[in-house]
Image (cartoon, rainbow, N blue to C red; front, side, top):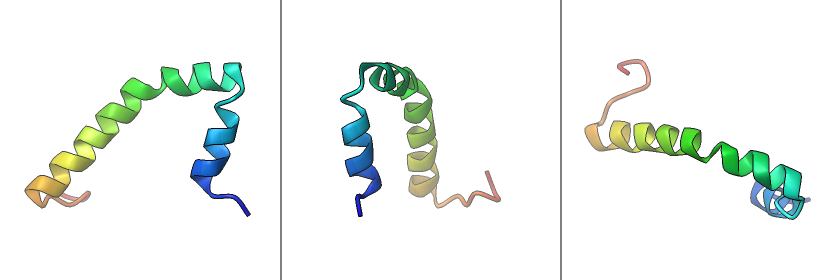
Length: 48
């Protein structure tokens, strides 16, 4: 059984997959910033 990270790593060898995956980077960055800010402030998802 492979992990999600192993699966994605394998898929990134496909140029078309990598292009689409890389195109999502700005969206992932915003989500990670939101998660980090909530953790830092102690805010819950409900409060957000």
